[in-house]
Image (cartoon, rainbow, N blue to C red):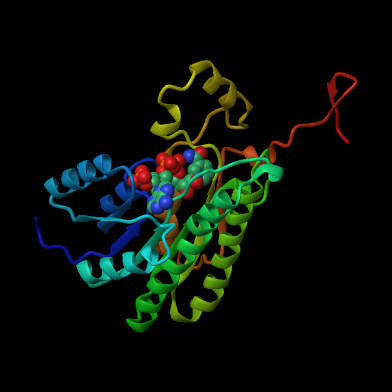
Amino acid sequence: MTKNNGPVALVTGAGRGIGRAIAERLSENGYQIALHYWAAPDQAVEWVEAVLKQGKHARLFTGDLTVEDTPTKLVAEVLAAYGRLDVVVNNAGQTLSAPFLEMSADQLETLYRLLFLAPYRISQVAAQWMVRHSVHGCLVQIASVHHNRVTDQDSAYGAMRAAAIRAMQSMAYELAPYGIRANAVAPGRILTQFLSQGADPLRLQEIDAVMPLRRSGTPEDIANAVEWLVSPQASYVTGMTLTIDGGFNLSMPSPMIGGKPTFI
Ligand SMILES: NC(=O)c1ccc[n+]([C@@H]2O[C@H](COP(=O)([O-])OP(=O)(O)OC[C@H]3O[C@@H](n4cnc5c(N)ncnc54)[C@H](OP(=O)(O)O)[C@@H]3O)[C@@H](O)[C@H]2O)c1
């Protein structure tokens, strides 16, 4: 392992999918990666081993982010291991959906803890350290297009995404005097390995066909956005939510009246 004094990025839920692509990109850009995973260690361990072999730096951290003290412990562990923290990407999440009339208290609690409370606390403890050490860091919240678009069965998921974005805006406002920026990325449909494995190819094509850009997104599309948001090119950008959805949010279908899509 070579010595590295590069900036440190904590990416949660980064063993696979979008988080993994973000970790990969930040690593390519010289960051030491604090890679958080939870229930699926294999891919996380494999990736960190590969990064170390390339002479770059990455370490594994774990913990269930729905458990009350995991978020603060996680940041403390990263700081103890690296002695610094420059970027936090709150990516870990689950899509739990149910009709409003049937949403269980347990599911609601999980979504609240994972999508709102955990990123809030992680950002708070990380920012407290950044302020104390005059670090002009970046916080990035991975959210979802559901934060402002109502679709089937997303009352709790969408609401928690909206809440996390609203909290990010206050973070951006209150942390701006310290030179700390906070932004969010709202992905649309992103085809991760997890989503595509075993999926019916015809169904995937049908979904791609309704996207204005005629494809689903890739984890790399989201990594591109995060890479830019934490870069000096975005040094005047804070409190913003970058929607990366191939135009999906624009594509409210026209109502069918008399068998034809109709402008109303
Ligand atoms: N893919 C999409 O189309 C899409 C669209 C909009 C928003 N998003 C959001 O983008 C983020 C990444 O999505 P993805 O598609 O890459 O999802 P994914 O493949 O399901 O990965 C989710 C990550 O979150 C971690 N995680 C789940 N529950 C956790 C818990 N209780 N405690 C700690 N970590 C937990 C998982 O860790 P382990 O694997 O170790 O269990 C995993 O690494 C998520 O927040 C997701 O909701 C995704």
